Amino acid sequence: MHMPKKTLLFLLSFALMAGAGCVSYQETKSSDVARTHVAFASDKTARIFYEAFTAASGVGRKTERETCTLLFFTYTKTGTVPGPNALFNEAVRFCDTNGDGQITEAEAEVFSRTWNGGTAASK
Ligand SMILES: [Ca+2]
Image (cartoon, rainbow, N blue to C red; front, side, top):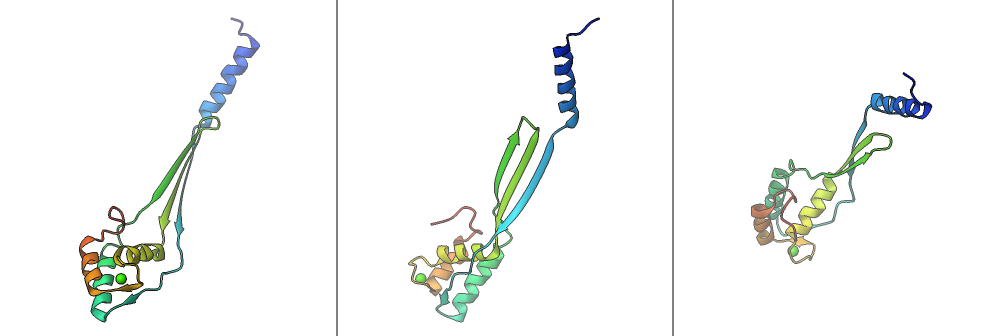
């Protein structure tokens, strides 16, 4: 059986690519910013805020991006996790409802009941 040269070359290229498999790459980055300055009306207010903030700090948010390149059989998965300051700033923005830079006891009480780590509730 005689196989044309082009067909043989095509089959050889296909076998080479199939044998190479898929290259997979995964990277997780942490992005952080400077912490927002905030004042608390009292020590009790600060305690309420920090207790609610740290209770939900285990709830991480991750922004993911996936890329699949068929030509070179490459699969890339990139994730970004906000750093602790970014989460703190978001918590302050969420808690300080009137945006005056001071957290009152009423704001801290509402915050402690509604803050879930910034995953669902936001202003
Ligand atoms: Ca305020």
